Amino acid sequence: MVDFKGMDFIEPLDISTIFSNALDNAMEASERLPEDQRLVTVKAERVRDMLIITVENNTLPGTRPAEGTTKKDRFVHGFGIPNIKKAVEKYDGQCSFHQGDGTYLLKILIPIP
Image (cartoon, rainbow, N blue to C red; front, side, top):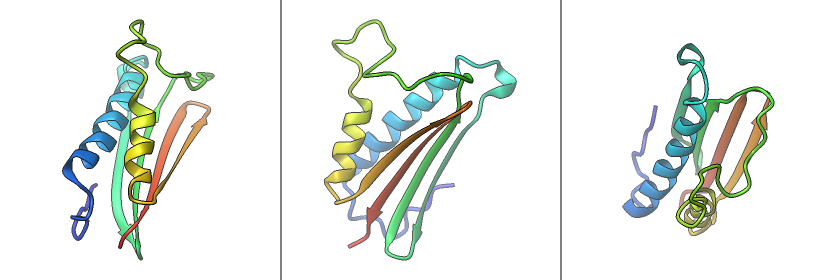
């Protein structure tokens, strides 16, 4: 569920940067799981004067967050999370990343001007 009513203060390129990188990472992690365990949940909503975006996905239990990238070509990969942070910070927002046992959660808070 994504509701962007009244969120036109965020530039389209920044929306694309946030969601494309977050979804790419979530889907990549999910592909390592059996099909019946794959799950990616995306939510974006206004709560008072904040835009709250969450992207959560299942991961292999015991998986640790990768430094940079898990892909072989490190020259052109590993920029997703830094780019998400940069886009969010542009709007004075904050990101948090939490790895649980079998889940990964990206939570973004952006104040609405």
